[in-house]
Amino acid sequence: MKRITLGALDYGLAFGVDRALRDLAENGRLSALGALVATELWPREFRPLQEVAEKVGQQTLFGITLAFSGDRVIPVSSRMQEIYGGRMFTREKLNRRAFFRLLPDELLMDEAVAQLARYSVLMQRPPDFVAVREGLLTRTSLARIVFKAVERADFEKPPLVISPLQPGLKTLRLARLAKTYGLQVLPSSEPLPPTADSEELQQLLLNHFDGMSDRSFVASIPGKSDDRLMREEPRKKIAVRECQYDVLKSDRFFQTLDRKNIFLR
Image: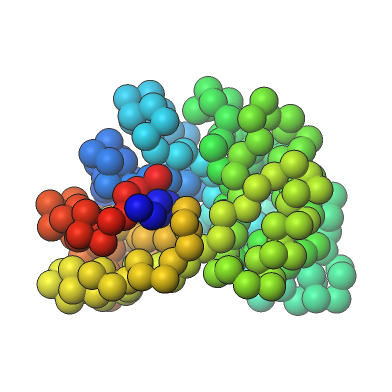
């Protein structure tokens, strides 16, 4: 029997997404749920998530998705707010600065520490795992900043680290770096297929988990449409979200897992 960590990493993005993720987690359809604490919705949406976490116990991992870039997120640390106002870096800018070894290390460290603290204080629990938005953990310089921030947080139980990479040389390097900080890395596998057709997704999932290593992290983006999503995301992506939500909550999905001798971590 193989264990798969099926997770979603964008809680706090929109009410429709948050409701869908809470429903799936409460009913055992997700095994990991990551919160974006740098969104304007987080101060309102943490309490319902906290209630779900208390209800399901250790059945599901609840963690944080650190955000240093992208839209719909705003700085948490006072220094980042002072310098950049209500905007984060673009992914391209951070990648470019990382390539030339010009990252603002102290600024990013402050932001990571602030986001970790915001999660822990409001959720009244440490994160079970840490992920980084937009795959930026692939940058060794930024990964080192994140690991140092986790070390500074001094959690009683170190969180897992979700790798944005599939098993391979780069993931091994990331795991070795994480180990020097006492952290363990979960490698990622292929995310759920981005189709808006429920029947097609059910068929694709029959073979989707084949060849994945034990405990692999599989990303998903389930959600339900709402006014915010309609304003901020393409209709095609919203349709994919709704398709994944419908499939994951179905009995047929669990029948597929049983057939393939897989259970959700």
